[in-house]
Image (cartoon, rainbow, N blue to C red; front, side, top):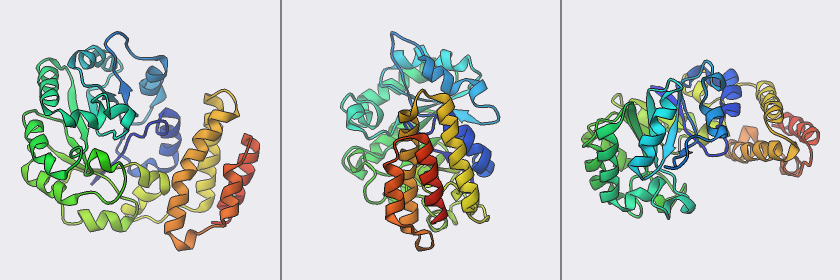
Amino acid sequence: MDIYFAPMEGITGYVFRNRFNSYFGKYIDRYYTPFIMAHEKCGLTNKEIKDIHPDSNRGLRVIPQVMTNKASEYLQIEPLIMEFGYEEINLNFGCPSKTVTTRKRGAGILSDLDLLDNFLYEVFSSKKCDISIKSRIGINDPDEFEEILSIYNKYELKNLILHCRVQNEFYNGFPHNDVFEYALNNSKNPLIYNGNIFKVDDYYKEFQDKSNVKAIMIGRGLLRNPSLASEINGEGRDSKEILLEFLNDLCLDYKEAFSGDVPVLHKMKEIWGFMIMDLDDNPPFNIEKNAYKKLIKSKSINEFLINQRILVDKM
């Protein structure tokens, strides 16, 4: 089964993708970019161009993701993305952030199914490339998904990626996997599962008998444990020496890409915020909390690298 790396705003940009792929990308089939916010009166920003430019993604299979609820905005930005050689664009109907959903973008579009249907009708009437969708299953209630799926079934999607939570659940609790079962039985489009795959057992529990699932998408799980894709494919977890090399190289990559220590430290500390959750859930990898606290309090890149080494040594 293919494994796709989920888009995570502010984290999985081209710097991270390239360094992650060089260490742990053996079993990652596609990387989805953090969403490009489409606007009718402007094209791609320099930052967005840099992130999707082929020179920034050599050797990677990348799918750009776009967020909008207006067909005119999508159709304006589609040819700009295709100029870089992309043949597929992913539409974001999954982001649960209130700053997005209050404007009926991301998962917010699921609160207005007429808007959703009209948007897709206009887009599919004029689109030039393949379209996939990453979606939540509703706003407040999983029962909303039946009508949502009836709309998706009107259109020929490259695939439908389902994060089986409603928008108001954010990332709390557990996915409604019964809804995914419903989708397997009723979707006219290929399905990809997304949500709460943090360990190998999570994968086998849900997918060992589901040969009709095209792929799984993992985001937080790969940040918590960069070796997860390898473990799912029968290989062991990489050594802590490899993990440390990856983290040090990633930090230096960020240092080259950004100006000053502050943005670099922000990126690295955010990644460690995910990794510490995996260590907490795996007793053999428990660490002294003081070592993590020192890492988070680091004021410079040099101090951070020293504290990072100490922390990984204690794993």
